[in-house]
Length: 304
Image (cartoon, rainbow, N blue to C red; front, top):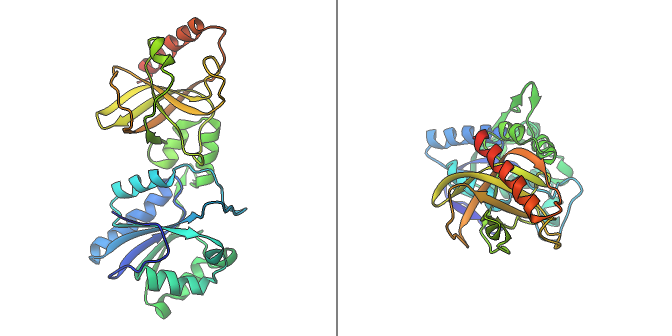
């Protein structure tokens, strides 16, 4: 998959483009991608996914800085879903002030070379979000593309949205979040060296440092699934500051993987907190912590 991260590009050949924020790549987003992929195959065109990336140091009041999926995680998902091109277009003051018709002409037509554009019914574009799906469809013949507007995906009669997914993650409702996403929520990163306190207590762990903008569930212990180059494993994950053994206050993601004790520093792993077991707490001694960890492990193994 070709990944473009700047505004200085022009795609060769006509394309099928789906546009959106795609945070979480939830079931509604996958509905767009599936439709765009079918059009791309039918018309022998490349499938391009277009999303915005806010320039470093800039924040806009209508954009949530916390991300269900980081851009790195999104790249992995789009690649798995069969996208040919991913455009992470810089969202800066210039693009924020661009009039809707200028966006259609300069970006959708000239840069993306779109023959088909697939969007959700609530998609907005251009200055102040003034561009609507009605304007997009009214511009089809003028700019030589065909617009497909899809209705929102529903769950239990309610529209699936990234904000709903965020709410469930913030509450620790990981099962509901996974249903809305259509895949398990995950935290991806490279395994880094820890203080090896877990190993000293007989519970070796793999540690990753989450991205600063990554939306994390509440601090606590989770039943977890772990995916790495060696395969798929199960374990328990602690999201938090480890108050019993550390005074640093930095949030880490620390996972004890069942039946696994290899050194994989520097390797990429994906940790999926599947079920919230208990909140993080401070224990009076390491012995008390070890006893609780044994109970946590017993519960997680019975869960799986």
